[in-house]
Image 1 (spheres, rainbow, N blue to C red):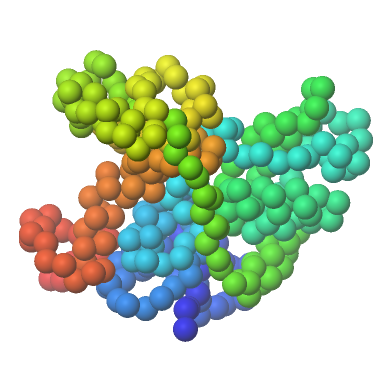
Image 2 (cartoon, one colour):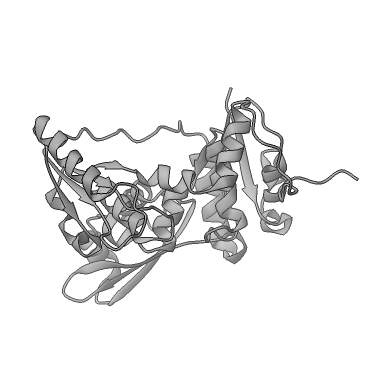
Length: 307
């Protein structure tokens, strides 16, 4: 049976709620030994910025094959504002009914639930596309309502009423069946190959790129190269093949995430970029599967050292 773990950064963050054996401190979760136990992990750390404690809790959870919320790709979407090209919600009628003549409306979303019943469907849409436990959402209106800001909230910043709303949403959500989103079926007809002409040591040189294009034609795929400035053209393609060196805090990750949101077949996909560029994730993954690795000459920062 899959067990639930609620990860918090400080014990005081849970002071307003009933004690639970499901609650674990982030430092203890990070330091726990590898096991075959199956867990659903709700990561409620105070922040998820790149390489923070919250970031690593989600990263190692994925390496341990735990079902975790938020996933690392959604953390990246928030921190780099990639949600601007990912989130698509219909907010016009709902917000017009609730906000009246106001030019701005803010709402809190907890696991897809909100305290404003008129905006229940909008909260659900937001959570389905950006599954983060606590979301602070800002809509602004000029001619029409638009999503202006989207940030992860934290337990320690909630007031008394918000804590009650959060607790009710958590209780409801933790009893739901977790399912992975269905993968969209895509057909590859036109493929973009992302290259950087100025990269000194690219993954594929110009000869290899020409061979890729030639091989694609044999499979009825029209392939052509694009560069960083062509990000606005992604929706014109059915697939994206990244042939420049990838990194998390890099335009290649943004290309991959936006292409995925458009429904393109992507290689390297965002999850692979997040995971394969982080040595701690790879080390944890190898340990999870019991594969031998070279001895680490440096102490593990997440595990207590014996004297």
